[in-house]
Image 1 (cartoon, rainbow, N blue to C red):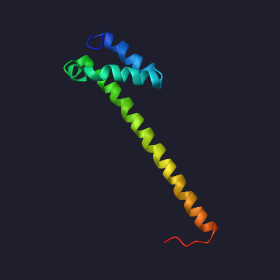
Image 2 (image 1 turned 30 degrees about the vertical axis):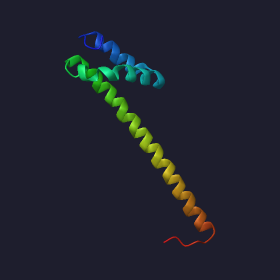
Image 3 (image 1 turned 180 degrees about the horizontal axis):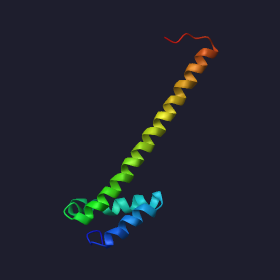
Image 4 (image 1 turned 90 degrees about the vertical axis):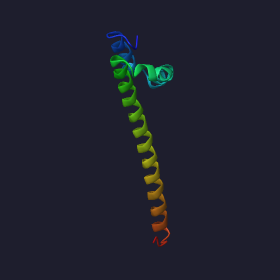
Length: 88
C-alpha cells in the first residue's frame, strides 16, 4: 500500500487520524521499510508525513523540558528572595 499511487493516501490519512499510541505503532511498522520507500515518489510522501510528526514530538518534548527548567529557576529565585539570599 505504501508504494501504490493511490493507496499511499490511505496510509497518510491513517497517520493523520491515529491516536498517538497508534501512530507510534505505525511508525515502528514502517521504519524497517524506510530505505525502500525512499525509492518511490509515493513512499516519499509517507516519509515526509512521519517526519512532520517526529519533529512535532521533539518540539513538544523540548518545550516541556524548557518549561520545567524555567519553573525550577523561578522557584529557586523566589526562594532566595524570600530568605533575602543574594544571588550573583
